[in-house]
Amino acid sequence: MKTGDSKFAEIAQNVIVGLTVSFVALSLGAALGILSGRGAFAGMISAGIIAFITAALGGTRVQCSGPTAPMSAVSAVVIAYTAEQVAASGLTISGAHFINIVFLLCGALLILMAIMRFGRFITLVPNVVISGFISGIALLIWLDQIKVLFGLGNKTALSGPTIQNLGLAVITLALIFALAPLMRRVVGPRSRFLPATLLAIIIGTFLAHYFQLTVERVQLSGRLNSLSDFTRLIQSQVPTEWSLAILAQAFPFALQLAMLCYLDTLLTSLVVDKMSNEKTRQDKELFAQGLANGAIALVGGIPGAQATIRSVLMLKENASLRISGIMVGLFVLIEMILFQDLINLIPKAVFVGVLIKVGYDVFDFKPLRLYAKEVSEKRAQLFKQFFSRHDDEPIFVTNRELLMILGSAGITVMFDLNTAVIGFTSLFYLHNKVFNRKNPMRDLLTEAETDAFAKQN
Image 1 (cartoon, rainbow, N blue to C red):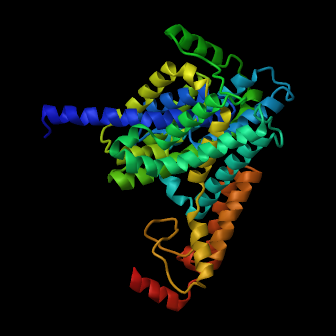
Image 2: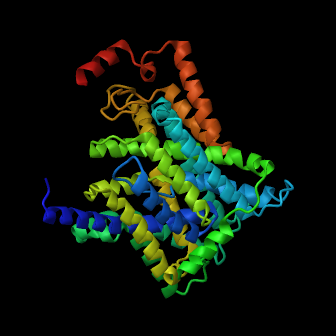
Image 3: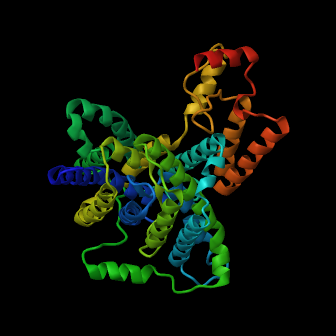
């Protein structure tokens, strides 16, 4: 049993962890808000609200949820559709309110999944499909940022000289990669209070100001200086018009976001469970995610899910109590109020660099590296790094698995997430049934390779 002093020390440690991770959550919230098309303010307020609700009520005890790259990339599709199609469809609802209805429906579907106890089905989605769709989302992020920089497709280029915007994006990206190991070496453990992403944003903003670059800056679409500001924000965002026609238009987008939140959240929870030696209550987690994603719709925010990088960071910082995640949410909301004027100084090109790094973190390079190594070595040896639907099923990445990964990624980019996941999951099991594969990930191993594998593992 812990003494009063040790309990207080544990609480203090968790509050400090919350403060540390809040800097990462605030930075990524702003970047992902811009990616979604709703702006930095929407991303930051969502980072605070989602983290607070899910940490307090979720089924994963130590975690951090908020806007994620996959959810923001799909939200961008919803928002782009709204801008072009809502008026053309004859609906009289405003674009902002239609988007909020989509997000409210997404929250309702997640709550329905929790009530129907769908959490256990996460194990049915094969890793090849998961790898494909998350890599597809990374490609969507990269393509979107290239369009933003150069004004390609239906995107308007960032204002100001292209060479200046491109330079800031490249410098920011290089700084994020370089600063993390440098800060750990120079500053030591205290480097956690200045995450590489946040530091790169600060340096990029300083360079733009120092050299007086004429580039486009972030413009926060809202401000929170008082309770009345928050009340007015809610009043302006709550949808006032509902109809079956509106719900029919919104439902496909809501379903896609709900499915993605389901996958994003429960896959992250598996990673967290492995690190913490605990077991997520999956349906409780889905319920909390549903509440959180419904709540952000009432403030004009963007949806999110349990975030892998932020959750892992909390565990590495020795978070042990729910209060750590709760404090992330509170600190994010406090910081966005305190630093509103400073955030308006940040060049948008800096966030392009941040988002390219986010895409790099999302993209699943592991199966490609394994496949390339196998080809180059002509499958002469077995590897101890594997790719399978279950951690205890070591395998090669075969030609068929690689085709499924590439196919899932391609369909995600060209069509949508639902088609990729449902279609290739069905194809995965149909393929295994047709070929009667007991261990479907190892069909290209020869008998000698199988024997060698057994001896090494």
